[in-house]
Length: 237
Length: 223
Image 1 (cartoon, rainbow over the protein chains, first blue to last red):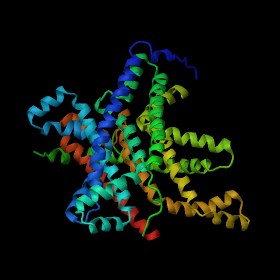
Image 2 (cartoon, rainbow over the protein chains, first blue to last red):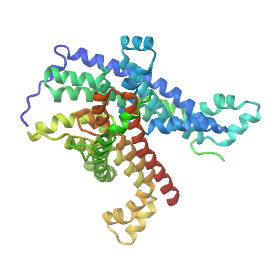
Image 3 (cartoon, helix red, strand yellow):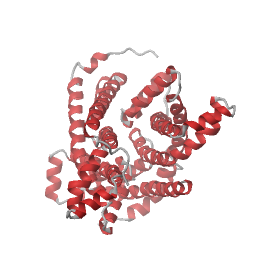
Image 4 (cartoon, rainbow over the protein chains, first blue to last red):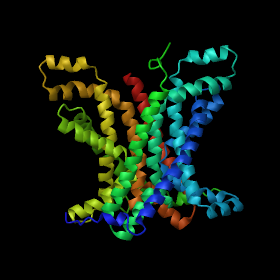
């Protein structure tokens, strides 16, 4: 291969700024979507285990429908399909305030909320049933038992799978480039377009993603040790 | 109001071209997904076994391969293949070749992890018994360990197949006419995004959900 590398394209001109902006957008998009995903995940994950069928049905429908359809289709759906149905004032506001970012955030959060829900449900189901019975026996309502006993234990149990799901979310935020959110992959492509330096641009993007993923995984390994529940590796009962 | 006529009028294009790939464009979700699943799994078997190899010069590269591809978005890998292969081979590669290569390389890392976990779930005594019977290491892997490992892998394998099936929608980014791209093409003419994207969401859902239901039944029978 006769390729003359020219790494300086990454910091000369606008490239450096673009990469930095892309990184910031990726982080903003991922963290907002993550908050939405965790909220939806905890809510629907808990709902799927409660002893009342209508709640379970609603949550199951949400989880199965949203996680079984490609994220890209959801991106198009939320960005192109939904805004025309909204009232004119809201639509106007959205298109003045980076509609593609909010649509992308919503698509990412709702999609990963359904996947997070499965992680949380399996965490809840791995808690011995006696915990719930004991909580009810000391006079807590079902809602209190979930809020004060079941969910806090489940959250500590699921640190490893929740971490890998969060990293999936971060990586999947790259799909938002299809609705022209100027995140990291989008900016990488932009540098490639402006400089015709595909290998250098892609390397920069790839290294940043790898760094983010490895960094978060390392931090979470510490968190996992810190929050591990002593003696609860094996299930009781 | 929901306009279902847009679906009815373009049903043939969406399903025959987009889903099956039998139209005028090279395309088709199934035509990409099925070979990608088969080849990705085959490469994944080798990577999974390589990760458990005793020789470090086999296990370390396999581990790096897996860790690298699991730390990078699939979109990035598709762009890599799209730009690099034509430069390396000095000839243009059709979208189908680019997409298939990217999916096989990327998904093999995930399949490799499933294979490794499956192999590690087979009790040690099985290998020892196979060795005691006089089988070589390759034979005991082929006849004793892998058949049992694959049985343990079924649930995660199906999950990964569903993920891959959904991921094929990303091939539309480089212009491959799959179901998602077909919906985009129709939408450019009809401007009915809500109906069209909801319809293809349903088509994807029918496939992925039935895959997971069949797997559930299969799992119960094996257990």
